[in-house]
Amino acid sequence: MMMNGELAGFTIPRLGMGTMALAIEGRPDRDTAIRTIHAGLDAGVRYLDTAWSYYLPSEPGTGTAKDLGYGEKLVRDALASWDGPRDEVLVATKTGYRRTMEVPAFVAPVSDSPESDTQGRDSEGCSRRPGGERQHLQAAGSQYGWMADSRPETMICDAKESAAHLGVEALDLLYSHGPDPEVAYEDQVGALKQLLDEGVIRYAGISRVDNAQIDIAREILGDKLIAVQNQFSPSHPDPEHTMEHCAELGLAFVCWSPLGGFLDAFDQRAYDPFREVAGNHGCSYQRVVLAWELSRYERLFTIPSARNPQEINDSFAATELTLTQDELAMLNASVDARRG
Ligand SMILES: NC(=O)c1ccc[n+]([C@@H]2O[C@H](COP(=O)([O-])OP(=O)(O)OC[C@H]3O[C@@H](n4cnc5c(N)ncnc54)[C@H](OP(=O)(O)O)[C@@H]3O)[C@@H](O)[C@H]2O)c1
Image (cartoon, rainbow, N blue to C red):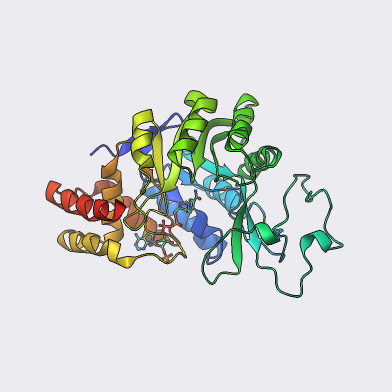
């Protein structure tokens, strides 16, 4: 199987590294995080995935962060302190989401709070919506959440901050993090177009999208739209068949949460067939999952998170794992049965 792929002008292994678990709740200390990224790069990873919103919010209600930019600066610092070829590494980031924090009963709603700036501007001058009511994604039991804030002016401002956090003049690849129910998707994609036109980003991607949104983005961005980042794993097998649509359009498909997700509960039974195959090879079932994903589409990139060097070393070895035709057929049948 062809393990390298072309993305944003880089020819790189199709197994990259998500860095979310190194930057949000549950993250390891910064030194361990840097060592984990170095281990991935030393193993051969050449795609690092981050986001403007990979930080911890620190103020209930607004979600304002003392460590805004933590995840992107971590990637910057890991690359700066790595002794390998920095220019071979594609760094992708995302814009249009922010973190939120549960509002305890005693905290006044943001709009009533004397500290809140009525323009919704933070210290950097970017216009940001307050959290509170709009919070819409939260891991079960977590006090932290996520919300979309993909107004074009916010996306543009945040993307420029991402470039500053990463210490680059232009971002290699910027995804819109996800649709914002309060912003027409055309306008959200229009922000990516403006960022391309201004040279802030070199290529655009979109995330958490259906086939209709892929078509809208393709229409507006043309061949500067190169990748769709959607959830894909044995437990979340892309029921809308967006991967096939990417194949029709020649777009890369980047799997988020390829091992079922970090912090998220998922159906473990979906992984039983992978455990069985792992037994044949004497390796982790996670390695089998990643090798199977790479077999699904020749332009698929998978970006597992890891919280320590051992995990990313184990995962990257999926690029060397050859599954038999019988194993692939069995795994495909087990996932397709769940997929509908
Ligand atoms: N576009 C989006 O909206 C979106 C959403 C979610 C994620 N993402 C991206 O996708 C990336 C990956 O997703 P994810 O972090 O949700 O989860 P994931 O990659 O599905 O799961 C990662 C977790 O699996 C465990 N793991 C990883 N490699 C392993 C191995 N070889 N053996 C055993 N366990 C292993 C680790 O958990 P422990 O540390 O607990 O062992 C790790 O934190 C993120 O970093 C991010 O870049 C994007």
